[in-house]
Length: 362
Image (cartoon, one colour):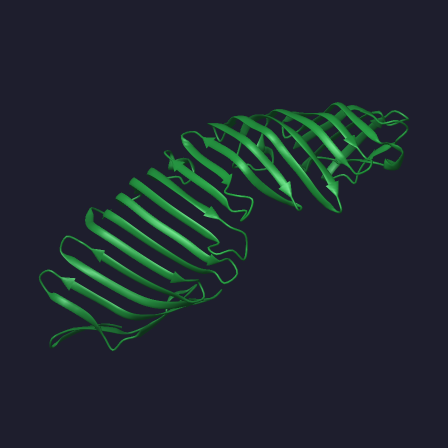
């Protein structure tokens, strides 16, 4: 069960305040306050608590200034303290300092237990139905899923949408940096370094580095990512080096391309010196080319595909095998249509020929 309480002092002339509507589920709340509502407390206990309970004024017009002194929230196993002021006239403007101690995200997200402290200054205003606000000097420090965790930087909200400006996030030896490229195109750039990938994906090993950018809907390209890795391991797979690039022309049309190259791929002890993959299109309509080289053979594959919620349909246009001791085998009677759904691969027939010899799979 989760517990929370709110207590503190509010000063604002002759204004009265109320708590509500409570954002609380399956929770009993005990509320105490003096007649003027300048001092109050709220205590609750329940199975599902969604903090915080908003404080709203009943008579904002009569209160040009409101001051919060040590307004304390007890939630998520810790405490959040709020100090600052709100000016209601001529338009709402706020300047608040926020400090949190011993916050446990695991109360709401069981897979992300931790103990975090944070502090920031929250400033902004409401104008014409829009909010312009910023979290300045944001700092979060502690442990998350039993790892050292830090987050620092600034976050702004513009046109009722969050807009990342500069954030540095570290969990153990993993790091993610986010920054706004420019005000003109509002693109978000990021850099990624993962030295402990098993934290993010159990069983995954190696070192990963990447960088890229994301742009709003309607921009071109909408997203770009370049990712590199070394000494990657997962189960029976090992990769000496990895390089991949991804780009989407538009989020609306989902026209994307991807190129992946692997060096010295090892699967169950079998070594493949290289594997390359080239993807163009989207899930509904795409074209894929792949090239795999082993110590004794080489395989080339090309197909076009269509995918919906139930079925993946693809047409194999080329599938050739160059075997060291058996020559080159090429796909005969192409294209070959293949259907895959939740039950598996539907029956199909494909044949490969070499001179007068022929081998079929049915």
